[in-house]
Length: 281
Image 1 (tube, rainbow, N blue to C red):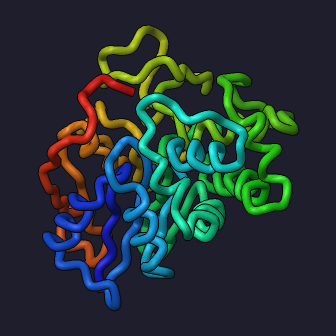
Image 2: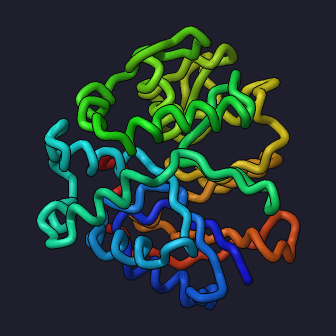
């Protein structure tokens, strides 16, 4: 049995199938982890959702910002954006079944036996893994509950921009959501900068990539994430960035988690034609 983590697919179904052929994926024997953003901007979000859902417990996906955006539109709590490609999902006969399944997915997955953590974007420096799991669970319970539409009504926004233990209500849920699905840069105190989206070295002071904050509490864990297509491959210990820009004409990447035949784990790539022009959000 093999386990592979796969970067942001964003509706690029054909490239996903090419990657699975490359790694000789067996849906009976093997397992897949997805870094989130299964949907949007690519041409085949509906087919990607149907496929990942069909894998049942052979696939794990965490929620990304584009996945939440789809759910918010479906709940009539957000409007489609000009570059969205979500109509196929929203008009599908199995729309409700797919969206209900998506809403049940976690923000964070921890596998102690494999020794890896899966998220979409980042963790603030104050959170160790136990705190991160507890925070993820808070939002997951709201998403899976009867009042999830009220959450989507207030999900968007950049405030509060730093963590406090006494945060409550929607401020707390919004901060947690932003970290798990949008975080790239923050400062030493954990205040984040959502406007910074470029590769490391392009940012203003005092911002740093979240995983390079000195003494962050999650250091020592092997963390897999996506979301950051301009980051490219990094060599930081315990950090595995898998969004290699398939949507923009880069690559779709898989990381072999088990069996661990190489250190660091082996990567597999397929070239992508690109559904969007670089720089178009």
